[in-house]
Length: 255
Image (cartoon, rainbow, N blue to C red):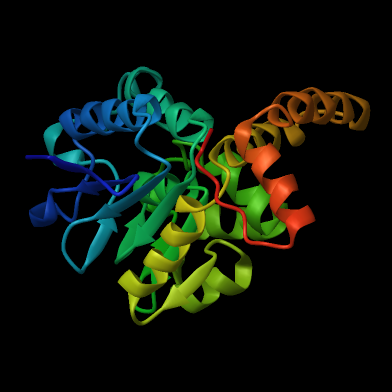
């Protein structure tokens, strides 16, 4: 089984399950992962998604070159057919995705990690844009995410050297949100936060942030107004305002 998909207590846990090849991305795994993300988006029970890799060594080692996914001809078609739908699904699903970085994330595996909304890394984890070492450029979203997270100069360095970045340096650069020795406890704290959050507001925030870098101020102000108008009609917004006025903790239901 290339992937493990589990839903319990409003949390969807998706695990890349090819530990024998460090969870490398095969065509089948890419297809299954895209479908899993889309299914989690449709499932009304799900309020937060956790994405991780099986085993302790690797989150994801990138494309599985041994089975032909990286053939020198038609690489653009491979990206358009298999990677772009996955990254778009991750970024536009209106639910938070927490990346559980249990080990190395390199190449397209690093891109996959960067596409998450929150990234929590084990202290022994690392990331690297290894594409340059095989004469290729970073893809699957890395050229979009890297400069936005670390700035263009550092992004150029990471992309053109393929250097390995430790978990501690990832935190310093802003590539991850948290580094922990007890990874499960740290991830559970983030899960608890989003399980109790107003889901529709979180989803709207995610969508607006997706648009912010390509919008001007006037456009964003109007998009904020439209989104706030819609969110203001939700049950969670009404509950949040009532709880504030009553000086109690709100109980958000994701409605």
